[in-house]
Length: 284
Image 1 (cartoon, rainbow, N blue to C red):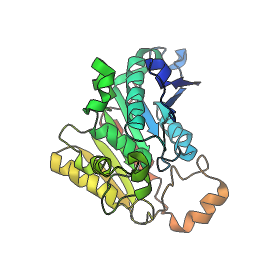
Image 2: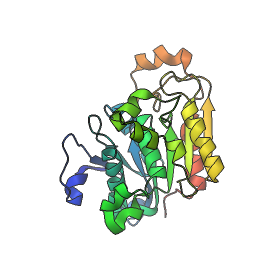
Image 3: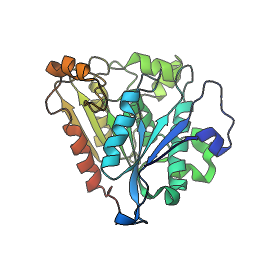
Image 4: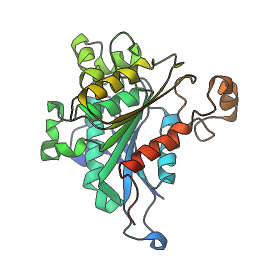
């Protein structure tokens, strides 16, 4: 496996703003003669959660490894967080998508099969990619702007709304407390017929980000005729990530086992089945 990290601001020749991060980690499995030196794979951009305060390592590499095992080239975006506000992280996510497609040949990526997955606040950022890539804030990309739109996305216990069932901390951090921006970033109101097909997952017992967020997004998708697959479990606390030894200590897994459904990790195979049905499989 080949790993490296790209400074997206440096790659695009853009001056890095204060408090910005914008680092893209690449976990490239490489191409070897045994299974075809010219093999091309689907890609995924992983966006961890963290309330727009930090980027959770538990929702970064452990998630990327699941995709790696399914034949994907995974990328992890370490995006800017508070005190940085919208659209800084969104611009970085768009730059990451463009980078992946521009370098698809070198990376062994299928440029028409680039997905994105986000958890919690990262799910909000992923939702921005699903709904807002036509916005003027991405005009700095010029004729590369269409490359920023994913071909599919997964919104995992996502922050979506700024309304009554909002995760107030995430929305406050990304908006800087600006009321008009809060309203704009209530993503269930930004869905259109051109939004990206989405897999959505949440739990009823999530005491941090209410499952109403995913429900609101699913309803908006249905109203606009956009394909989606919605999965809501009764049990399960917030931030479970992949819920195994790659994302948690043995003690953490044991301590929360009574409140975690035995089928929680079914989302992993469900998501890959949904993506496979959309053509996200390696070529050759």
